[in-house]
Image 1 (cartoon, one colour):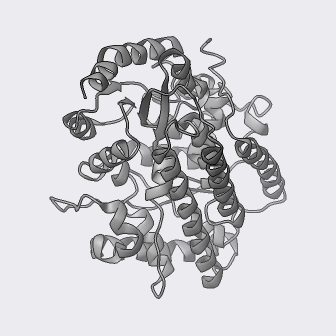
Image 2 (tube, one colour; image 1 turned 180 degrees about the horizontal axis):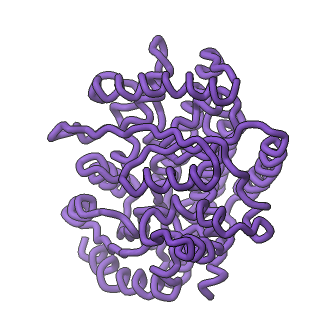
Length: 427
């Protein structure tokens, strides 16, 4: 269990390996396209990917590339490159690793031949440091930075069950001013992208992309429900994290929709056959926060030692509840705005996130929660009040200076013994 190698995940599904092969082939083709002079964008997870999909502008998602960097155990090297260049390395590590790769200047050791230099960078600056990071990245790479502003919900009380309201009733659930603001900004983005790339925006193609994204979300919701409702769980979070997120970064494509369907079907087959991530499952755990991409096998470690299975992560959870936006008879671009207006709030805003985390914990019959790197006060308070113990770990998922496998195994093991097992036995 060395820090440099991480703990490898034991495969549970055949489709995950298929998705990984596709991703490598897709990236190789992307590098060829960029080498031939096509425009290339690097987008944050909260950027409107569907517009780029509809305009056939190749793009890579920052968080996926950072997770690949982490999986290849290159995070420390790229954080060092940032530090040597005089930049801070204790903020926005998940978003800054690709800039560290650029500053390291060694494509021979970079993942999959390295990230091509972008012509467009886009993010929704959630903080001053996020904006400064992308402005700095744009200066170093020569890219054009296109920020998408983020608004804030100012209502004192937001109806708790947003996951039921947003798919169909987003127009009435979200404040009109926020939808108007982002809708107008997305229209402006389309015009800027047409000018920068010479490509045209097709409303019919965009509508198709939005329908495909909704179909993908429907499959993810069905998969989530299968995992939640089956004991022992057919798959663990260690498997669903990569199986969900590779297709998610292709959201709006026929391949991504079909991949989500394949995942759903394989999980259903495991349920029907009585197959499980761990036949001896006695405890079900929830992982709040970003994934440990450099050590996915750590989640499976607790299956053998405590019969405890991590069955929930935000990746499948949000893919199930966060993206559905039906728009029959309504403007699909406004529906896209409705998809991204609450991004971030669903995961981390009080009342939004705490209500959802409790709903998901109850749905999955969670016995204990591990929260890593989150501002989780409100979720912790709500989960603990419901009798679900929470362990909060102050660490960053891609910054190995803040954690080690040995330390996490010790902390989580002690938490299971001291808090989770007694809480379960007292019910």
